[in-house]
Amino acid sequence: MPIAIKARAEHFRGLIVPKANEHEAAVVDTLEVYGMNNILEVIQFLNNPSLLEPCIVDTRKEFYEHQYDFELDFADVRGQENVKRALEVAAAGGHNLIMIGPPGSGKSMMAKRLPSILPPLSLSESLETTQIHSIAGKLPRDAGLITQRPFRSPHHTISEVALVGGGASPMPGEITLAHNGVLFCDELPEFNKHTLEVLRQPLEDRNITISRAKYTVTYPCSFMFIASMNPCPCGYYGDPTHHCVCSPGQIQRYLSKISGPLLDRIDIQCEIAPLPFKDISQASQGEPSAAIRERVIQARTIQTERFKNYRHIHCNAQMSERMIHQFAEPSTSSMDLLRNAMERLKLSARAYNRILKVARTIADLEASDTVQMQHIAEAIGYRNLDRSDWAERGL
Ligand SMILES: [Zn+2]
Image (cartoon, rainbow, N blue to C red):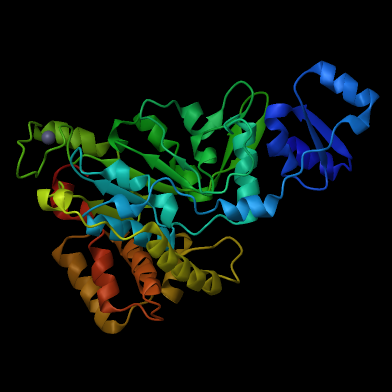
């Protein structure tokens, strides 16, 4: 696709590509794209161009037709209402989120469904994302446009190059493949500590510049960062039904891997309880993704209006400190609540701005102009790891 876009820009009339890439290149309209199986066909065609018709793709039709064909839906998730709510708030404000819970509580099962409640890709985002996946050789054969937000879930053994990009000849990494979508790091503390450190800058800048002796290249990487972790290495700290076998030292080492600057870039921290049996066994379905997505889109519409004069700000999560004061300043009584909670729960100073940002999003979900007490209260609930009991364990 990037070659086809360049060919059109340079006023080429057409392009001959391998048959398997025909569809992808033909997405670029006003360019005649011919897919060929072998060199013999190319020669026959050049001798007699009337032999073949160019491949025609109705780009818009294709794009809008498949936008909502999600394989995974929140309707399949029973129980875990508080986690689903946290994911909805995250989607509504573009907030990064970490889930903390024992093995088998459904963390990755829920994370995988996040793209289904995000606002749909725009056509220009889709072109951008498709080009990235095309360059990386990640598009399936005969694929056209990517119509849904990407969900990338690298394994914790991933190398720094594979995560952020680079290599002998430059290639985009997982963070760029997640551009306009979601990067999910399951079992975050298992990742190499240095690999996690290099995530910090791209999370802040939403692009990554890689400099090697032979090249310097910048890739976009605007993604929602979702992570999961166990409460301790064995996974059962605080679990009433299992015995945790970890020593305090082991827990401290485990938690210290994600402390500080990386955690600072995560607005929502959500603890997950083991799924009670009544929730697994209940027959009723969860709320479908389409209904949740509708609320998310409405909250995002409010934010688009709010930030229309800011070129690089699209959602609440991206607000600077100054903008938080301007747009998320709570009433006096809500401010008192926040001050009390900060003291009582011994919340860190870094939690303060995050709470206001998330409260702004919760208010947007209710279409409330002002940030009110109940919005602040819910947002405080998303700071589990800031509480002093976690701090004592090593965070
Ligand atoms: Zn344990």
